[in-house]
Every structure is written in C-alpha cells, then in structure tokens.
Amino acid sequence: MHTQNSRISGFHKLSMSERLNKVMEVAGLDRSAEAQLSNTGNLEASVVDSMIENAVGTMNIPLGVATNMIVDGEDVLIPMATEESSVVAAVCNAARQCRDSGGFTTSLSGSLMIAQVQLIDVSNPEFARLQILENKERIREICDQTDPVLLKHGGGYRDLEVRVLEGGRNGPMVITHLIVDTRDAMGANAVNSMAEAVAPLIAEWTGGKTYLRILSNLADRRLARARATWSLDAIGGKSVREGILSAFDFADIDPYRAATHNKGVMNGVSSVVLATGNDTRAVEAGAHAYAARSGQYRSLTRWEVDQDGNLTGMIEMPMAVGLIGGATKSHPTARIALEIMNTTTAEKLARVIAAVGLAQNFSALKALATTGIQKGHMALHAKNIAVMAGAKGPEIDTVARELVEGGKVRVDIAEEILLRMRAKGVSS
Ligand code: NAD
Image (cartoon, rainbow, N blue to C red; front, side, top):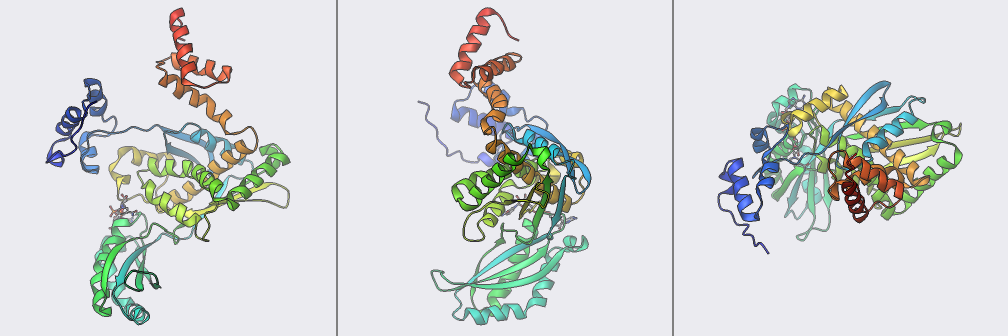
C-alpha cells in the first residue's frame, strides 16, 4: 500500500500548480488526476488561490435552475447548486402546484446579527451585567466606529443584551450580545470586529477577563418566513393532504424523523445558499439550533388546513445571507446566480430561500405520503449508478432506463447491462 507523509513544509507558500505536483507525488496520483484537478473550470486559478488556503483545484457541483416559483407576487427563477438528484425537480413541482393559489408570501424579521463577548472571572456577575448595560452608548460608539462603511449603508449597532450563564468551570459567565444591523452583508466579519473592539473595555469596566468574541450563528433576529397554500385539487385530494399532515406530526414529535425532515428543507435552502456564494454551514447551524430552541429538536416547517380544506404550510428559520462579502462577490457564478434570481438585496435573497425550503419540504412530504421517495429519485439515481458502472455518453441514458424498467437499480446489474450492450455494439 502507498504510504503518505502529510508533513509538507512550506506547502502554503507554493504556487497552486506546485502544490498540485506535491500532492500528486505524495498521494501517488497519475496524470489523469492532474488533468482533472488543474482544470478549475469557470473559476480562474488566481481566484481559487485567493479564496482558501492550500488550494490545489476546484470541485464543481451542478447548478440547476428551478422554475415555477412565485414569491410575493413575482416570478423568480431559482439557481440551485447541489450534487443531489431530485432536489431541483422537487422545488419545481411544489411551486407549480401552488401557482394557482398565488405562490409564496414571505417576510423577514430584520437583518440583525448577534456578536457574543464572553466574560469570566467575575465574582459578582449580576453587578457586572449592569456595569456593561450602563455603557450602552459607549458600546454603540465603538461598534459604529469599527465599521463606518456599514454605517453608511444604513447598518450598525442596534442594541445590547447581557446574560449571566451559570455552569462555567470557574463560576458564572457574563455574556454580552451586541446586536448589529448588517444590511446586505451576512455580517460575520463586521460583528466579530465589533466584539473584539468592545471586549477590552468590558474587561476593564468589570475587572473580569474576556475570552471569546465572535458572532452567534443562531441568528434568531434574522428570521426568514414563507407561507403558501396548496389547494386540495392541486395536490390530489384529501388523502394526500392527510398524509402530509401526518408526516409533519411525526417530524414535530420525533427528533429522529425531524432530522430527516429538516435535512429535506436544507436540500433546498443550502443549494441556493451555495449557488449565491453564501456560507452553507452558517445557515445550517442556525437552522438546526433554531429547530431545537424549545429544548426538543423539531420541524422547521408547520402544516395546517385552512377553512376551505386546503393545505397550508409555513417555514420560519434564521437566514444569515448576504450579497456582499465572503464568496458572494468573488465567485463569478455566485454573482450570476443573483442575476438569475433578479435579486439586489440580501432581504429578498433570504425571503426567497425560505420559500425554497418550504417548497422542498412540501415535495418531500407529498412523495413520502404517497408513492414513496424512491420513485422520484430513481430516474436520476439510475443515471448515477450507470456512470458508476462505467457507462459513457449516450450509454448512460440507455443503462439508466433499463435499470428503472427492471426495478433494480444496482451497480452490478448496470455492469451486466453495459457488458451486454457493448457486446451487441449498442451504445444508444
Ligand atoms: P465582509 O466583511 O467581507 O463584508 C461586509 C462588509 O462590507 C461590511 O462590514 C461593510 O463594511 C461592507 N459593506 C459594503 N456595502 C455594504 C452593504 N450594502 N451592506 C452591508 N455591508 C456593506 O463580509 P461579512 O458578511 O462580514 O462576512 C461573511 C463571511 O464571513 C462569510 O464568508 C463567512 O463564511 C465568514 N465567516 C463566518 C463565520 C461564522 O458563520 N461563524 C465566522 C467567521 C467568518
């Protein structure tokens, strides 16, 4: 077996192609791997190298566009970056089925982010809490001086909260929350800088010691909301509706189910977050923490019946996304994704993403409550299996079709079909 030495001194100082050569040598890769990795596709190598450390190439993910969405009375095309089949189709289907009832209506609670400053080693934490609160105006000044550009764009410091948390190893901790309007930015760097600027003063005022100074990804002052109605006719009648409601009950009661239910929501949410160059992990962490806010992990969506018997759905979740900062501006595809959505504000982006999350959940619940999830997945899954078996070009569709028709989508069967096809000289 090939043994590797992962200690490569000065690796970060090398150029991207030198790094790639080094990796090829250490990992024992062949020339085809080099060709694959050195093709950075539609992202210039210099951009790749400026985005992350130790870059050696790119990992392309398909970008699809979901159709049929109406959000707040406007038609919107949805760019979705995902490696998973069925995700884009699910949004198209859900959106088509609620077009007659007006599509999705959305709102945003605000664009407020929270930065936390941790203070320890205070023997009188309640007293310290008031000392910090008394300095609200000074804190406002420091925060706003830290980011004058944000201020110019209508953002900046908004509020202060101080909490005493019991249970630290050296006694209670005093946690200051700086609440900052970050406007069109996700705001991580903006609020982290503010927390770092304020922390020494908090230590000075209270006589304690400040440690962590960083944003909270539980962005519960930046909640995106979406609701929609699906008529009984559009969804195929009462039994489908009852199935969807019962699936929701299951998720809301049982964390084992809720994890999968919310994963489905995030199939939609994360795809748009990624396509627009936003931070998928930030939104995912916020979503799951919010889903567990009652102490039990529950559904991010809620499903009910209106007075006419139609199915109504809603979603509410933290949505820390921006149009400025991170990869949103540096990745050319992310910029085009925003153009596809015709979106020029972070608020609209957040609201549309919430609608996509709800649409995704509708389709998953409907499929689960009726035909089962595998039927919809099979056509594209079969193509993946065909590729795994070695099918190329037109062979992929033919092998996939035979797999689906045969009812067994397995790689060994795909290999048999491929062998048979090639023996007969059939490739399409
Ligand atoms: P940023 O600092 O690059 O850009 C935001 C700045 O742009 C603002 O502070 C402001 O000065 C300026 N700006 C210009 N026009 C603006 C407008 N219209 N509205 C608002 N600000 C405007 O980016 P950011 O949003 O602070 O940080 C996002 C990045 O931080 C992401 O890449 C994320 O991955 C990363 N990050 C995330 C975490 C986390 O989630 N825990 C932690 C650290 C970093």
